[in-house]
Length: 612
Image (tube, rainbow, N blue to C red; front, side, top):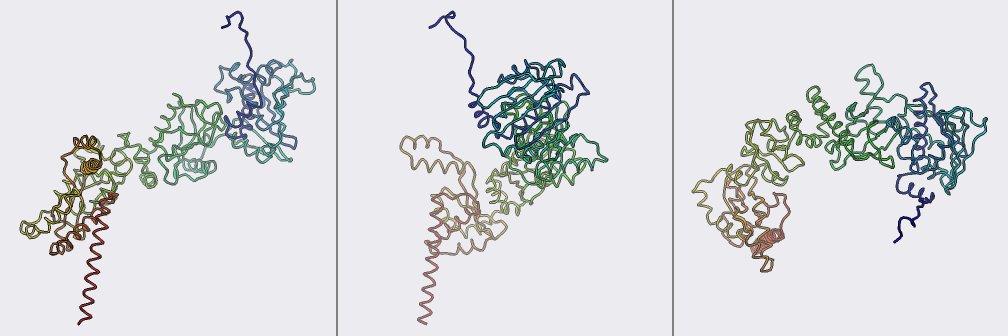
């Protein structure tokens, strides 16, 4: 091992072509960002000069011709020492090193700057003169994509005024990025909100690409005119006409802009893609993580001076500042919702028609909002689609099913018997129902059990049940191997012949028993130790059903068993649950037997008619 005295220090060598390839294929999503980098440098230069001379000009000019592209800014410029220090040193930023105290005013922070232009340019020429020293001559910095550059002092007549001119010569294959229409489009897309005038000159025409004062900072004749202008702006930049707009004026978070309510239902898994400007420069039109997850029903357009961009300047750095901004913007959307409930129930109803899921997502974590939204949140219940508040006033004991299938199975029966049940199988709904006792004292919430349903059904007179004893005994012996008990009750509607009632515990026990039957001795012993004494599933036969009464009159045991199996299979299908293989086999066998019996009877009847 070498000692410290024999060790030699060396400088890192940078392959510029390799670095450009890294930038274009990994750091930046597209070469289009070269226009943003040019605008960023120009705006920062103008901002720096305005700090020392508030009367300095600010207009930034972009010119496109067959030879390439030129950007002129009347900014602070660079001295010869600055050129060597900043333009030829990768990773160093003049804004970071020399202007740290005013950093919030500047766009650039990573010192990459002009290097990004090599994604489209074969050569970059910079002509600059510093405004800080009138006696300092202008400087030319000329760099090629092979990593070489030269610096020379300009003659006095070559550049008289302070500022910078950047010229790009397209590299072969990148000419399309210099098309005048595309350059103007990119300049407008990236810089529409910049505080200084930016124009693009090409083919004798001059196009302004900046809007001046942002739409949310303008003065309007009335609140209605302001809202109309904001919605029109949202349609232009986001591509849809919003259902409503929420202004996002959060001074402490350094954010100005608007949140636009989607006119269609949104996917809760979509965290939202927002258009974010950083000090007037577009950061990204697909920024994620700006709002809480529950606010998936809005898309934002904001300008901020507090959030930190990633190195590519195409996303936001996840830090405490972003978390605070996210919380503040979420609170603003929440306040908008509560304001609608208090002042404009009609607009709230229109909003909830499309985005009730988003409100439910928020309400489960916000008791105050849940209390405010309670009269407007509609749930599927045995009384139809009604608000939860209305349903709870009618049913002090609110019973909820954990799945959509269980609700569909018992909804008709429970409604006929006066049992109030809420379908808790949809996203967030069981959680919200569970919160009812906290906001409506006196209301109780219980999960619907099979015992509740059977208790609500009418018992059958002893004589009537005795008359069907034989039928019930055959039904019980037929279904016992399937883990199902049989009881007789009377309920409406009479068109429902049988009701299959099951519980989660009973289903788990059947699964355990089936697994035990197929397991080896060790696993069978373990599973046997887990055996549960929970009640089994029940097939509730409806004494009011004409079908059940006709089946009870059958004396052919083979036919009766097939009919009972068919009745059991029909009740299973009404639960909308997936059938077990054993249940599918039973259902197929029962219908085969019944079809065989029916065809046999038809044949015998035809033969008897022939003999006659």
